Image (cartoon, rainbow, N blue to C red; front, side, top):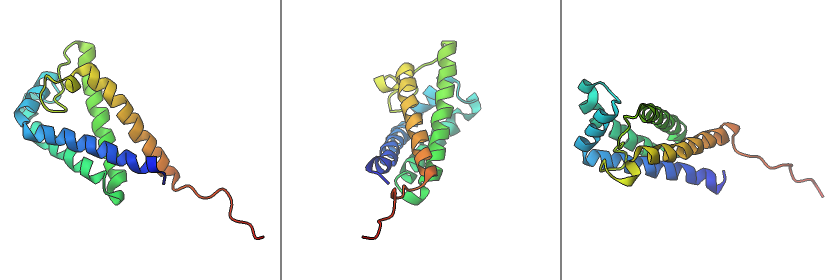
Length: 147
């Protein structure tokens, strides 16, 4: 496994840990973001605002544990793809607002266009890592020949 293969889970793990912690610290701001984006029915906004950050935190931590990485990558991909789709639909409708992904809903990193641009490479990175892992560890090109 190359150094890049080992760094990708750490990078994505830290992104998800940070995103989860920002939301855990201020669930009310995240609930407002969920309500504005119409991510969930109004009755579920509170539970989603409480539960989703913990799922992100656990997924991020699981990315740091080698034996949990495949499942964690699947979960993070599902979260990234799902949220990106929700935000893209809201953006096309003209109803996209700050996502609340990284704390205060008015920060630069929470702007819808920034979030969409940020999520695309994260999704591609996770897919690429999964592809590398499916191929398995690389073996030497040829065994040493006797002299």
